[in-house]
Length: 466
Image 1: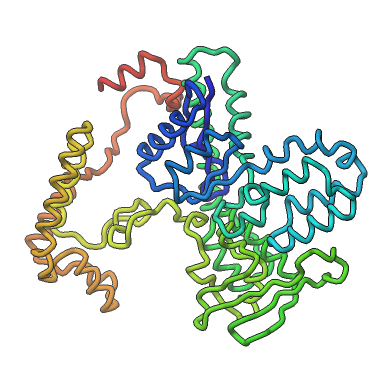
Image 2 (image 1 turned 135 degrees about the vertical axis):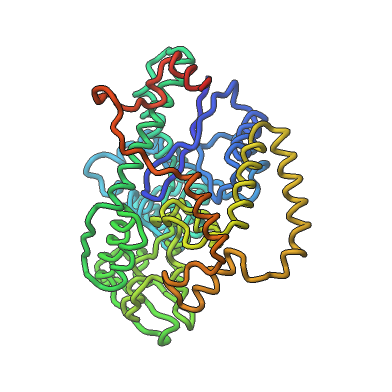
């Protein structure tokens, strides 16, 4: 049976596997069902971009199920037959190979690609070459310049998916039974999670190496993960290859390559960078930020020229930052694990909070209870909105807002009566008992916690019934 993987990128620029599917066939209706069920399972919106091979059935299904998603072909699959079709042109030592590779992998603008392709075809007399003609006709589906305005996390091929397929083959032996396949797949997921945990630890504990020690670089080291900060350092290093021409002060600049005279005629050597009057948004015609989510070297050159101390918030994509997993709105940030204990507390808030948790637990029991809980909670929300419009100032959010606006610190954390405070403290003591300091009897064990895929069937049953 064909096995498909949904692969993406996390905030450490690692490949992550969202899920896998075993398919009975590769027809249009099958792909429609797969995509529909996958998005319902994740409870997530449709992706901005999806990269696939050139399967016709999959293309029809994507257009039907994901009409707002940009569908692109994998560049590797498109060029897979290039070596067979081009023959001696891609032989070792040929002049055509590096020029073709530069057009495919390094060109960033559409105008540059069009001029470079026409120059290459004319230089080597390939106007009647069938493969290159067909390749050029579908350039909008695979060529990198046509991706620059679409967010792809710097991916133009399904290389990450192919790597995941190769990785899976290392875990799953040929002809294995279904139960072994599932167990080995879980083992692969566990190992991938371990790699991600290592990057999390590396970001929090690893030292930062600054290349230029300028304020904007220091700020980037504080917001980006370790891997993405290293990517930022590469763009910062490339700034040295450009000179800045001021067209309109604080509105428009041109970044020109310092070796523009020695580069190919079709290469784009100048990039126009425009900015807002408040210097909080920059637009470069290279489209790197829209494609990658990281500021390009041309924009960085302008930011350094303007002596900005921090990257503008509009140019810091959250998915590359240290707090990419913090998806709670501002009013609920107090419940995140990395924010420590609550600054404020009240009996009214705690009782509502505990009741809401009970409703969530009951509503998550089955499909019917979930539908009923959602329906009733929506009704309650509609009823509460007009009543809650009148605020008495004793709500938790009101207290935090008042304290923050007054600039109060630790001394003004509690503005509620003594009886309510004592009730909250006693209630908190029952909810979070202090850990026991008594050492358990017997000799200390040397065993470690087992991963899910290492547990035997008996262990899994015991854990289930406990």
